[in-house]
Amino acid sequence: MLILHPRSEPAAGPQPGDVPELVAELPLAALSRPRLAFFLPWIFRLAFGCGLAELLAGVLLPEPAFIGAGALTAVFGLIVLIAQRMIVHGGALAATWIVAIALTLAGFLGTLLVPNVDEAMALLPILGFALLLPYAVGQRRLPIILLIVFSTALILVGAAIGNPAPFAGPEGEIFADAILLAIVGLVIAALVDFWDNAVRSLTALDAAVTRQHSLSDERIALARVLESLTPRASLDDTADAIAEALVTLPGIDVGGILEFHDGGLRVLAISAPSGFTIHRGDRVSEGQAQRLLASSTRGPWAEPARVITGPGQTEAGAGIDLAATVYAPMRSGDALIGVIALGTSDPAVALHLLEDLPAAGEVAATATALLGPALLARREAADARGLIEAIIAERAFMPVFQAISTLADREVVAYEALTRFTDGVRPDHHFANAIAVGLGVELELVTLEAAVRAAERIPYDLWLTLNVSPLCVESGSRLSRILRLSHHPLILELTEHVAVADYGRLRVALKELRVPFRIAVDDAGAGYASMTHVVELEPSLVKLDISLVRGIDADPVRQALIAGMLFFSEKTDCRLLAEGIETEAELATLAKIGVPLGQGYLLGRPGEFIGRTAAVA
Image 1: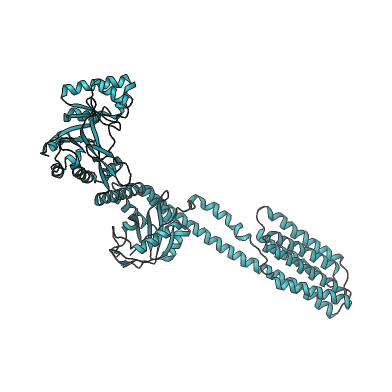
Image 2 (image 1 turned 30 degrees about the vertical axis):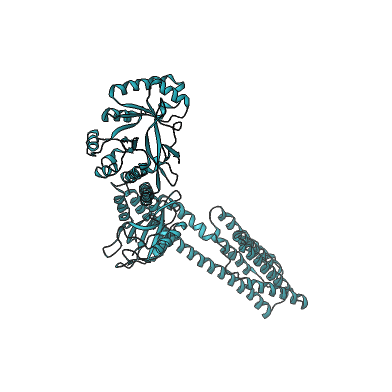
């Protein structure tokens, strides 16, 4: 079975328009290399040693020819050895110039000073030209040609005015011929070296041009693939489109996307020949997934096809003989969201994709842009759902109760049931997440049942206020069963986590509960929705929002607004309850206006019920 792997975004590759510039730079780059390959160090160490020996022999015999030839040979060998050291340290062009000029001087001095050496020394500038020819480009061409012309003329002048041979006969002829043969050998060696490098340079140039054309075609193909990737109607449809686009790349047989899921990897989408046995939803084995996830930190990479074990338990490449896979990670910021996988039956294609055409990384970047937000949202939803499911299963919450009192004499007349979660997270956060992942009603029902059972310690002559959402009301029999457990007169306080789309249906659902209760509306005065609740549901209790209560003792505008709402409550036969009372001044002002009921930290904090009060939780 195919296994898919991750990596980071690759550097942008060459564009089709970049090819001429790349090719134009190749000749100089290919030829600007050391051209003294035939100057083997041990040969010129030997030449230097032989020159010194010949010089010593000329002094001892004495033989002037030996002295001159030995001196030239030793100097020439030493110069070449110095040049060779310069090449090692990166000075190939400078070293070649030194040798070429040394050849010119050797030719001139040889014809001028050494007996039995004649115009044959003119071959030395040809050797210099052969050495410098690979660098004869641009502005370098003129000084090289001038050097060759000048050195040839200089050597011919030296031969014309040179000293006559001190001795004649076979020995002199042999000596002159040996020098000539040595010069011819050096020239031939230089030309052979130049020919070899020229052939290799031209071959490399031709291969580079072919490669650039191939890359240009592939870049165009890749650009077309990336352009074709657009969002589809759903996450799965978009993933399928990306997988199908992957197999249109040259040499790719299988394209797939692995999604990071529940700490592992599973197949989100796959496009492969009919003989391939991996399918959407197959999960990578834990060991394999951990290996791939660890490798994803390195960025895109290629590796031999392996085995995926899991629901499919199929060998990679089953039926189509996959040889290698290329993987690239999909990341959103620091978060790994998935892995792009490209399967090929040709290992060379995998290396090519990684080194020359970073298609996996580029497609991964595009896939991340298209799938990233949806995959992250789905992962966050899955994490949130798992947390809510754990809270429900473990009952990781506790009911608490907050007193509702009369403002005139502070007598407790009811308790509102609230929920606190053991992880310390705000209740509204958990309830909102539960609604977002489709578990809002389930969380409400378990917390309501816990509250009703815990309220058994509250005297039955006190009202019990329960917070319920419209969705929970519409759950019907499940809510009704919980309400029947209570021995208290009930008030159902409708919360606004979800907007009411159909008040008629909500009124019907309330009647079908078939349990005696009164309706309360929360946060009156905070917005249009709460006032719509008041009009549509005709509640028995209207709770004034804390924003109207806070600082009312010093705000005549708020006082007037609440006085108007008090008039409304009298006309509609409902009672007002002020939420969030925290100071004596606020309580006194509300009591003076005529608000009958209140709730807040001043009157009692939420806590477990003990006696007729709630002990602060």
